[in-house]
Image (cartoon, rainbow, N blue to C red; front, side):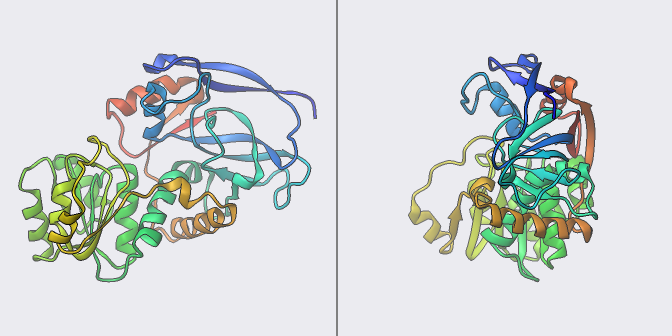
Length: 328
């Protein structure tokens, strides 16, 4: 195969969206254990904004983006299970998903089943696998569980609501304001509570008939964490998996005892999918949930790859709802 010229987004400094630049790169043949992809859809995640700003330090220069879907163009030596023409996706193949073509390790790829299209895979793999480990690993949701989902109008929050409901849980979603509460309800929450109101824990208990949550999924952090403890049933679990409002405050372990012998964890998606076989098993469970309609891709906006700056501006301005995709 002749040398292929790829376009990709590169950061040589950190800051405003304008620091993202489109550059070209010559890609040769994939090496041992690697695969050359033509990417069809690229997923945006808010971690991309933090990394672009330098909030999470990265070496410079660097690519950007964690997930994409596409078609295999060529495979290198020692690659088994993939061939040219296969539809595949990845979530954690190193930064650099913002590109039209890319060479990635085959062990980071998962085949996309016929029931799932490329845009669904790109929009849902990162967020969906986050929901998957929370719902199926961190706490395996059972029928009848009361589940509290913070930021339920967000990308992961909506997936958590719909999937937990499909698993038989009674789901209460929180969000900031009436409009976002309506989004949470539309995503499957049995009740939606405005957490910008100081008395939101009382509203939560009113919605459940006084029952506290078997598990709280908290991606907000500072603004919700302490009250999350008050909403958790004895021996229940609080899972902090994000910090949209800032890091959760430090607490003494004894507080967990006083609140009802609670469990507290801070998981993340990458360790849960570090092993290739586990990653593919987790993705298969997610794809099955997509095919069954339990997980849906609410794509709110599509931007050309060259318009990545506009995509970041829209995300930071909260000018879109649902997932954002970059289309090469």
